[in-house]
Image (cartoon, rainbow, N blue to C red; front, top):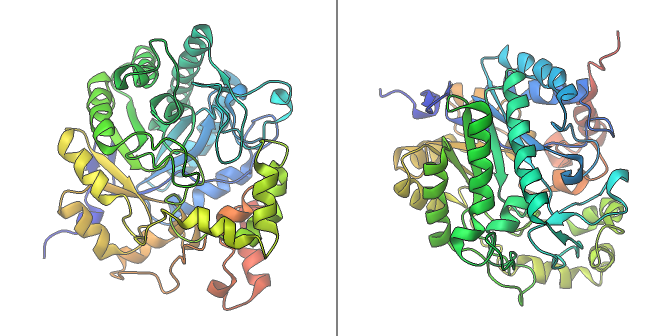
Length: 440
């Protein structure tokens, strides 16, 4: 028998990962309000390392407090954060698992501003109000752009000093880098707006700044939305970047010094195509109230989700362009990108079947896959594959109840049917991330 491609090492220029499955970026509000990390986050990441993934891509890690998406996420905005991330990395490494820190900046997509940002608008490529939540941004000045570029470079340096295995730039799903890249969002008239080359300038500046800071021998990958689908929810918005646009961006990214591309989709988060699956409006309404003061349209969205008679309107808008594919929703975009670059390509999007993943890799659609929600449902999914099983006995239903809860509640699988209807068993599993507590 030929070796199982899932369990063949994946060799990047500066990094080797033991298998082809990565935990994609997903995490809850596990940390302290000031951005310092906790034992709970270490417990959370350890679950996936123990479950067999080759590498973990962290949740978004803000490079500055001005750019954090919500409070209670560990940041990398100062040198004092390095010891925590070193401790986390050491724990993950005990399982021969790599840890890649995802460097992020919210831009205008700031779900809950935090007390430091209450009196100032989030920075973006634009001053246009975001179309779904209605976030009010402020277009960055040249000085703010350069400062933010340096924040990313400093974050990469700190990640390396912490002994982590690499960094990923969050250039997908509507956050700051997307806001510069997207023709549907970026309306600047200077050298950071207009043409595709100008819109890509911010991302390329960040890559080059990181290389100057950490050198060429530290792993650096870029997560990017292959297609924006910027009008997926609000039909009168511009459509944004096409796959052809992204193919050129990926070639520039490779030339600038990136070691890998991570393929996703969509110009905001959540998006009808990311995370793929259902969107439980009635459950989201129970936590979305935390965001009502964040945007101009958040109260409208809350009403559409909160009241049964209005939910069909929300579902109509949300499901218009969702598509029917669940597993491998981004595979064909990934295949096109892989044909246009020489560096490895990772793909995310609904994976949880071993035979499907093997086929995706063997047919050249990607070099590895990243998984989020299916691993939340089954932390040991990779170990299940190693036992020869094609799927877990209780697979992820892609109900996205984990997403619905994450704004206020601990992240975990909230689909009670997966616990044989035992609500208390579900809560025990969700709360298990707090053990050990960190107190002696």
